[in-house]
Length: 143
Image (tube, rainbow, N blue to C red; front, side, top):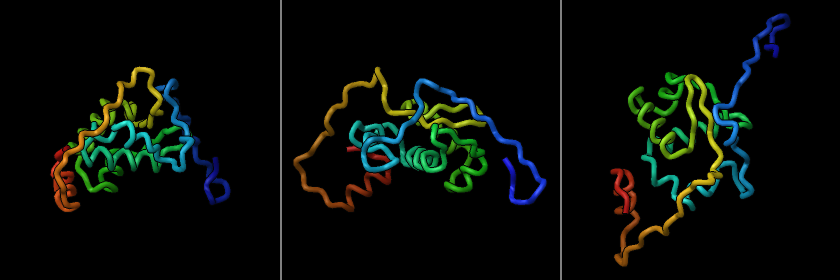
């Protein structure tokens, strides 16, 4: 791999998959971000900071879902501190959405043989304003 200046060689980084059994594939739907995140309720397992980290990683990862972004760079780009990053990363690992082995992140495929059945979201019979719903979401509340 060469940089733009003649004679300057930059070593190529060789990435090794953390979870070769879970290499991320472009979903057959219409976008790079898999709609199953919503349909299968993955996002309910994570707070807004974790969701932002996931979106960032999906955006910057390579074709295999790998990224070497440093903690400092991620914190700066997302406007969070190191503790918030660690918490978000842990939530994503617990939700089985990423694997992390410092300094490498791997966004995992959503195909899991042991994925629990997805229950339909609870619906209330009450009429709610969009403002009330957004307020509850921003405060970390669920239903």
